Amino acid sequence: VNVRKIQVVQNVLESSEALAGENRRRMDEANVLCVNLLSAPGSGKTTLLQQLLPSLGARRCAVLVGDLQTSRDAERLDGLGAQVVQINTGRGCHLSPGEVARGLAALDLAGLSFVFVENVGNMVCPAAFDLGEHLRVVLLSTPEGDDKVAKYPTLFQSAAAIVLNKTDLAELLGFRREQVREDLAQVNTAAPLFETAAREGQGIEALAEWLRQKRGAKDAPEGGMPEPNAEN
Ligand SMILES: Nc1nc2c(ncn2[C@@H]2O[C@H](COP(=O)(O)OP(=O)(O)OP(=O)(O)O)[C@@H](O)[C@H]2O)c(=O)[nH]1
Ligand SMILES: [Mg+2]
Image 1 (spheres, rainbow, N blue to C red):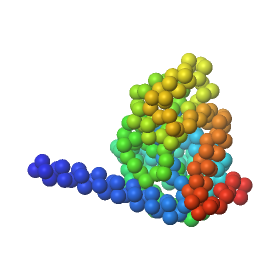
Image 2: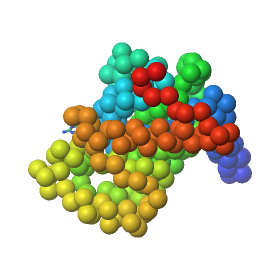
Image 3: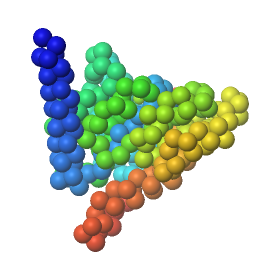
Image 4: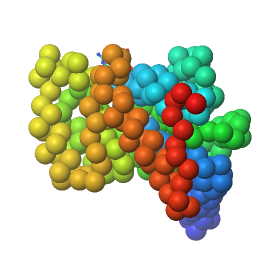
């Protein structure tokens, strides 16, 4: 009986990996960069997307947004010109590659440059699941406290870029940026750290430019087409 149980768990993990690989292949074929956005609930993932999409050219972007319930985040992102699909996980504390596969099936990938996946707000579970993304952007916001990088290292380890959001509140909260930098020196020295006040649209352009470069790098092996900007 024990052996059977172990076998079942293994199969689930294997199919999860296979689905993630299939998601990545589909997006590679479409020459789309897939960015998985991870953070605690309320760090500002949706707010950041509301600012980023116009900057990147919303019609070149799609968002798969995961929440346990409601379509509130999709409603907030609707009307910018991007394709938006809300995924409700019910009780699930993270998006699964299967859910992302179903989300991708609802998108028209032709002509897209970016697919953003806004994961369920959670600093622990989503970090363990490859969804088929090309890279992860992890947010930390000042009200969460400056100690979180050291406390949740697995999340920050997996980040290709880290966004410190709600910097407008840093002084009020006594948030020590130095603590974040010191902790990142132990956990992740490769990822650039961007500072944003997303609600006010501050610091967005540097992150958008970094994303454009990452997307452009997908073209680079062939010598590269220039990445179109928001105007065209
Ligand atoms: N002061 C301040 N508030 C912000 C900033 N960015 C987001 N907020 C606010 O923080 C709250 C949560 O922002 P959301 O964008 O919904 O956060 P989220 O990470 O998408 O949340 P979940 O999807 O529930 O995990 C909202 O009230 C935003 O207006 C910021 O830079 N400064
Ligand atoms: Mg959100």
